[in-house]
Image (cartoon, rainbow, N blue to C red):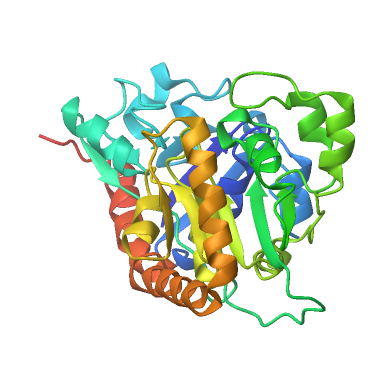
Length: 341
């Protein structure tokens, strides 16, 4: 069998590493897929199995195809191994090197960039585990509308602070933030916390913001519990080509309010939520988000219908069985050393 190696530095992309575990599981009939990573604690918190070897302990010559994060890695030379390497591009030609024979496009934006640059590529998507991410009825003690955000709360591109400021005083809702760094709830906002205009969040506001932050389950199998506490997910982004939280929330039957970036558009186009146009100003986006939440609060049956449409879109286009053929083709071409003409 052909041997595939994913390599990356441990400080970035840990959520993607979790999903590579699915490729290891589903494609074991044809490929030996390994990860070589510098251990990163949130990832170790998520899964029982973790590749303890770093790229320094792997010999690139032992593998038929190598996929480094962002196309480069300090321990695997693109100059020396580019012919049997490719990359996973989330935005544009991110990670592509002219020594590579082709790239892996993970979003519509990336596909367009490859086409416009006349560079060969494979269209790839991370699948959604629809058996793990599904609706689980949760008992409620009140009739508040649970409005949530899942992801990086400190990165200004995700606008968590702007969402917090817009919604914290809205009556009839419970605002819930589930940060991506589960083991330190306020780490991201204290270290990176700025709003969309680049203004730092002050200490007093941090203290107030922390009241709305929930730790969640630190295990991968516990992530759906975060979504299942919500009545609606909000992700009003500056730029988000993949949109894992939107896809996962939709799989759990949770309607979304999101900007129409990248893969997120498939859920919005299917009617699984409310579209926030990315061409709007930040102020306009926040107001439209607020208005949509108030409307969802008043129309529970409509809200439920949106969630059902989102779930149907996941089952139709986003489950792993819909993605694996493209990954097989990607690995086969890379591992067989075939030249594109």
